[in-house]
Amino acid sequence: MLDAGVALLERWQLRVRVRVDEAYHFYLAGPDQVRAGHLLEALADGETRAIFCMRGGYGSMRLLPALAHAPAPTPRLLVGFSDITALHLACARLWPGVRAVHGPNLATRQLLGEGAACEANRHALHAALFDPRQPMSAPIQTLRPGRVRGPLVGGCLSLIASCLGTPYAPDTRGAVLFLEDVDEAPYRIDRMLTQARLAGLFDGVAGIVFGDMQGCRDVHNDLWAVIDDALQGLDVPIGSGLPCGHGPENLSLRLGEMAELDADGGVFRLFAGG
Image (cartoon, rainbow, N blue to C red; front, side, top):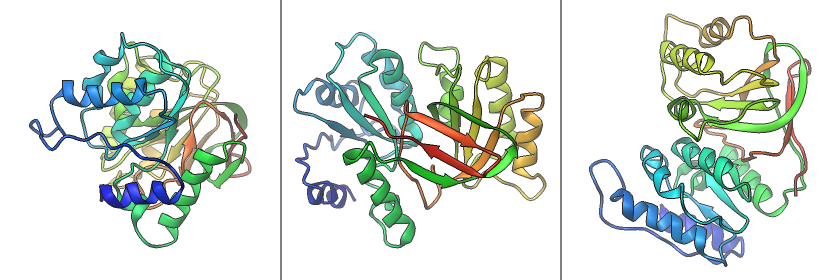
């Protein structure tokens, strides 16, 4: 699917340079030093304006030590989601000029498939790339009422939980925290939220909005009741069902931009950026 992803970017009038290695290492798309080299080359390339990650899965966290001492790149976008959350978190800590776009990975059916959801994904990614001043909004459900604004941070819950206790844990003070995941049973969601709470992730957070949490259910427990229980006593607005993440619809979010979580009105908004 990589060729189809490249063709899509070229239809958007982008000049594409592909950095890929045909080797693999266990369950990874190559040894760490090779994969880190591709990323560092793209970060150091002065002509690069955006870096698109091809797939998620596992392995991005293993690249973080290679980024720690790399020179700061010029401003650019880093596009992806799922395992790419680890790279987004690292860039937020190391290089504020590298702006994260939580959106579909390039070589995936979310972006390249047919149907209304895929078309919406393409439209949202195009807007995030070429029209950052265009605000976006999406419906949500209300778990806890309230209305707040703050910079948007977050991504895949399991990656955020794995980065707690490292230099790359996100700063959520005053922020709207976005969390999503896939195929995690409710008890595992409970465990990750409890770990995050014990680690102080929610200290000072303005509000929390969850994605659709694709596949994070079982026949015995209501996921949202489990989440509500895990976050008991946290007096902030909480929304659910934002169409971003591993479900069919994965609208692109420019992390770091000002967001509004209106749990009273059932809407999430992301405002114009620069």
